[in-house]
Amino acid sequence: MPTPAVLPTTHLLYLHGFRSSPQSFKARLMAEHMARHYPQVHWWCPQLPPSPAAAMRLVLDGIAHWPRSSMAVMGSSLGGFYATYVAEHTFCRAVLINPAVNPARDLERYIGEQTQWHAPEESFYFAPEYVGELHALTLGELTHPERYLALLAKGDEVLDWREMHVRYSAMPHVLQEGGDHALSNFADYLPQVLRHLGLQA
Image (tube, rainbow, N blue to C red; front, side, top):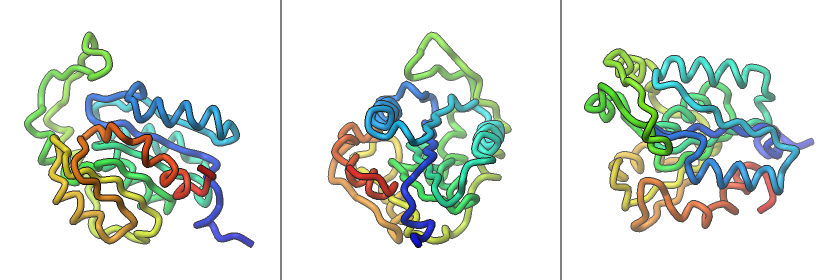
């Protein structure tokens, strides 16, 4: 009988980054690929509220009845930080794309009015208390590193790849020379991502 670690993914959660949305190119690429090739997999990519505490409540409520042995989470940037939290609390598999390591520190300078990348006509307020909420979601040493796959780019212009590498080097990972924060060549890694999710490329 297969162990939970090798069960194919039946439920997949995707978490976008700061100022991003389900309209990011990676989220759309994954959504389209899953719909075309794996329609049996339950896909969910919610629009996350700016409050980290509210975002995590939304996510944990939404996956409350998902099967832990066959669910998985993906996240990019701040979404990678959130995905780490989800994976540690559900013991599911995770794919992290240039994940934020210390967003409480990095986002403090963004307190105030912000616009959405994919809808610049829409704005939101990043409140000072959100920094404390990020601190509350920050975890210590990660468990079961084999459950993770981290895609890291040395050319990330937003986050320090060295910090990401220190945090996630003990787990399966790819350290790309060059690249960018958006991981514009994400499609190149799709077969590896699908294998990690227990799905055929």
